[in-house]
Image (cartoon, rainbow, N blue to C red; front, side, top):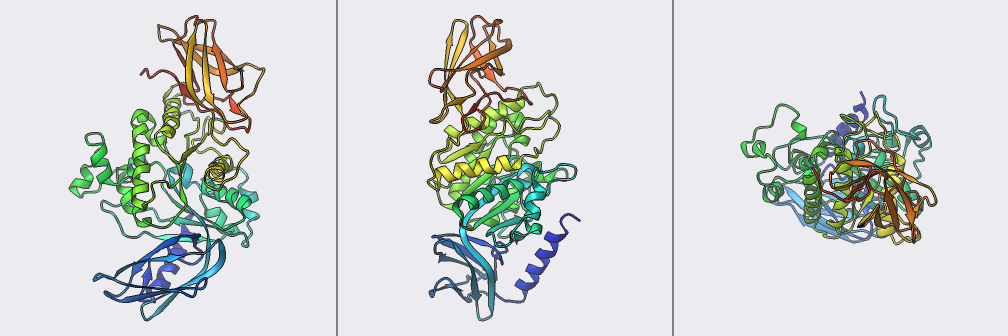
Length: 476
């Protein structure tokens, strides 16, 4: 029942499209948002060799392209500054009109269940503030969300079902919560239309969203692609296999013109954290090559603390640190820290607004020119081991670390025996460093912070962004 509304809208869209010969790809529909001040990509189907004419109400110009021998057509149309609503007419002799089209900022939002989770939540798993935002949704606010149909495939598919929602109570309820709060923060600050395209599926690994050829090139012998080679879809947990989500869903969006990507994924790769440090940069490289923009922003979310098999096991912390380390490998990227919003017993934290806000703050500062806020999580870059203590230097922004003048917990030190003991830290000097010590470790050689599946943060920057969990060692 929960997908009934989406199914009905998909059927209605399909019925309208079938009444005309010319058919844009499903992603191009009423209520959509197109990227402002760009030559946006449009594509679809028509009769073979047909002349396709595209007209818009924001311009007197028209675009004319010719479908190929199989009826596929592609076009580029110039968009103005943010505004709307507009209409787009596409004709090959019979007209089809896309209505209520906005021009603004478009972001593609992908990942696993924490990106998929709607504003209305999952069964028994709420999203904080959901009723307030759903019931208060104003259709006049030009935020639009699009949900991409969940499809798996052994080969890249040219199109995939899509539904665009207006900013109504029903539309907000169906939107990805992370994507919605990201869009809401952008709109509240920029006051222009924002569109978010949600292409996600719970319980999926990053390699599922990657092109098989990229995996074959960079991860030969590591990633099993036998299902792609044999052409036989696995019977069990098929959606968790490499490349099938890229083929069935993500490929269909290329090259929809967008400002950038936001990404919330990692739980399914948690035990292979070292490999993830290579997979995520490779994934971003693939995205940018596919979209033809090597500076396309990429903002991602750390996995949040959760019990998993045992709250004291270290793999969750290792994964959070591995994710943070990819920042140095991926230019034009940023990370939303989640150390302070985990839930011991729920892998889907209710605090999705904090996640969306932190992703949006990265974009607002890095891509839209706003200043005055340190949006990046404090990141350790220097470890100085002394007799009885360790000094850790951070990139912590202009305002530095907090809180000051109080002991900070959650740290551990180890000596030559490689046994870790609880330690205490203090913010020192110019608020860019901490001193960590433990009476049980007189000669420390390694320091860790938050290296558990579930831990509670104590170190932040002055804008409330938690420092990333980290470790100085690479011991197994």
